[in-house]
Amino acid sequence: MKYTATKNSNPINRSHNKAMPKYQLIIMRHAKSDWSEDNRSDFDRPLTSRGMKAARQMGKWLKQFLKHEQYPIDRIICSPALRAKQTCHLVVSALNIPENIVNFEPGIYDASCDNLIALIERYSKGVHSLLIIGHNPGLDQLLCYLSQNPPPANNCAKLLTTAALAVLDYGSSVISVNAHEAQLRYLIRPREL
Image (cartoon, rainbow, N blue to C red):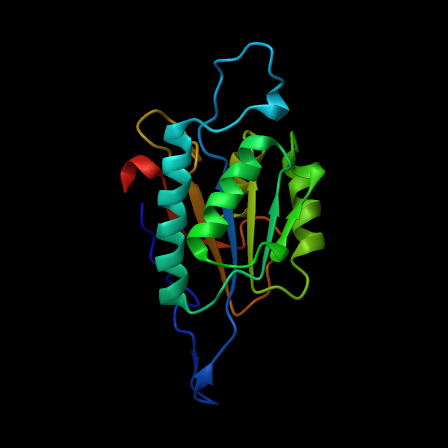
């Protein structure tokens, strides 16, 4: 799904005739994980081959989006669960960015919306573009909380399916954790590309 920004969509400051800084939060759910081994803990579940393909695909989409926007990702916070780490590594590889901007944050695993809000508040200071990679149901709740308008579900009534990502735009205002302040520009699901 593509959303076009209506507010703060013009990045040019006419009074100074130069680009204004733009702030965005990108929320991504980990790609599809493998449930085939009963003795494996939830934390240690790896990606399936389909999940790896989807993570690469979303990384390529994100690379094109960021190239167009001309604002690179400043920081990534990611769950340390294996499926999230593997998703992150594939996305970072597709973006061709250094892994030293990634913080594996234990608080993202099994986090509530409130916990995610606290982490975003902590990690967004001094950052223009922040990517968070984690899990549901927390990410769905976070997306609904931050977005000005209710995000549309897919035909199965799901928001962030595996490997889906949402781009929340704050325009020239810093990333905020206040309710309904962000413009949802994109909600992209692998099957919809």
